[in-house]
Image 1 (cartoon, helix red, strand yellow):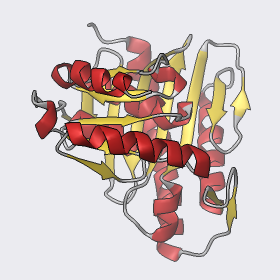
Image 2 (cartoon, helix red, strand yellow):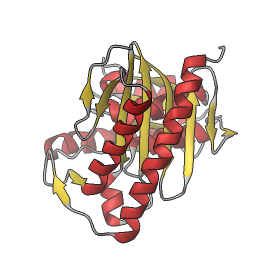
Image 3 (cartoon, rainbow, N blue to C red):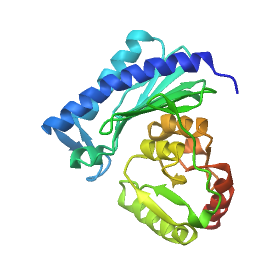
Image 4 (tube, rainbow, N blue to C red):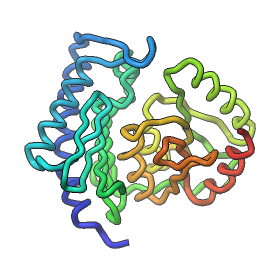
Length: 263
């Protein structure tokens, strides 16, 4: 695939803005003095840092591209007129951020007419930037990365995640319990964006979760795909609908069969 020039150019802007937002998030993390509220449930946290970082990202995007659309976890929403939409998670892994667990990121994906053409996931604590643009490959701090070459599902390591809603979490737990017998083990790290990037870099052989939001997967999804991973949905839903299965091609089919055998 040839490099998409618009994706390449928009990635450069996304990387710059994500780095600026990461500075804000890191400052709050160091000072540990910020307001904390809840959103969809008592366990679904949002902080002053989330809101300030999203506001900074939105200002940066609109200053450079005032006609683009926006979709942000903390409320940014604009249709735009350019055919470009920015999908923003100012802190993916807010609970980790609040507890001081070093696994949270600034995630910015860029869509053109519904297709993601660029993405950056900036790991704030580790000061690492995962990046990708359509046809341009995936990179970590500028160096190329590739997904795992594992072929044996039973020896593979997978990332998983859980929803904040108790009913959905119970459903996920029962589902994961059944799938566990088919793989080596799982890791639950608390950031969908970083989990997809760990698939891209080979730190995980795969990742699956369901009922995610667009801002959780837009940037991480293209990074995984550009690193050679296959991203798809399951149970009759698509990846874009938040049913996420990401791995190399060799593991993808066997895991899809396992996931679809449990309904």
